[in-house]
Length: 116
Image 1 (cartoon, one colour):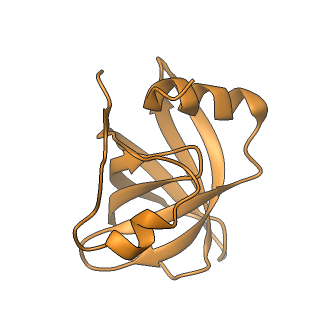
Image 2: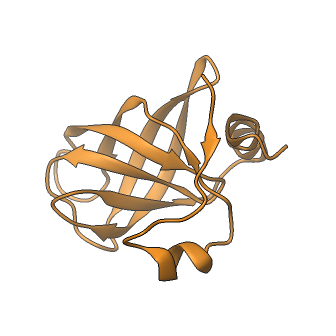
């Protein structure tokens, strides 16, 4: 799967210019689980872009800013499990910042976005 660097976001130009990591277009279906609440149910999602710092996605379900989630992301022939926090959410898309990313997961993401 070829990744293309995202040069800019028209609707998020201010946010894009302050990002720590370059984002690349990356579209795969994945699941995430809300870590709060009595029974975490899987939510279906499709990624839009990815970086070492997080992922943007379309999510089927309701999320709250600041909420912790578990992301099960297919990447490089394997699925990596990452804890993330919801940084923004709207009817169109949600953004997640990765937390406690292992060195191995970081390297897989870096290879996937082509910045290694």
